[in-house]
Length: 280
Image (cartoon, rainbow, N blue to C red; front, side, top):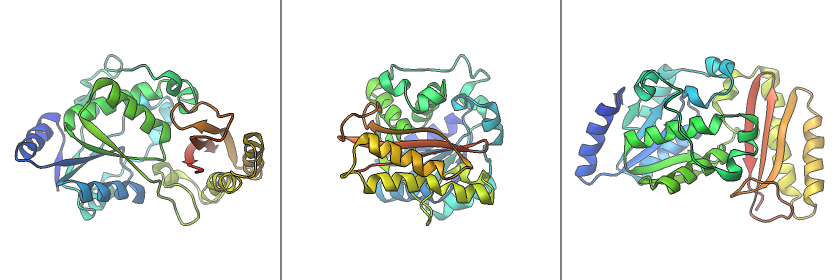
């Protein structure tokens, strides 16, 4: 497994492979890897000749400086996991390599429509400008590929798809299923920051989602919303930020049960978790 720290080194190696007819699968991450990330690497390995994983904690997508400072950075654990999963290349640039010393002037955006107004965009101002900025940079660095994203960050996936379509970027986006712990909690790098009590309480998020899914055919949207909020209210350690039954394409709230995704975000202390489920 080769590790690259500069865009030039990465492009030289990948271009040589492409010129010989090889395909690249790309898995962008912020490190602190778990089984969900590794499932993306393994799928990319199955579908491509070579797999590239990036590890970069992107400062421009954090609207909370404390969250950026506390985000886990554990490359000594991440790299063996990637090698064991069959990853061929790892791109680990410094912030200056990606932003050339100026994270403000390098920020980019596109017209997101409702995706830039609701749910994550509403509660994390500027977040998707940062996501668009770094994903574009990573796609430029990695070149033509298939890129693998988990469905847990549902809105992010929708934004990345819009970016690729609007700018004709030669990358095929491959969505991959959420990987969950045995008790239902969606795997997340932030889970490792939870205390034992918070970790136990966090399962209420997936419990609410699965309960709503199980009553999808028999209850109205208003009843399903009320059911979820009642379930979450039973866990005092959880502070609900939003629960939304939304359209999969626009993420606007639905009035009828069609093309739906059910999304949730909540805090446990200062740790923010998100999750979602497709009810049909």
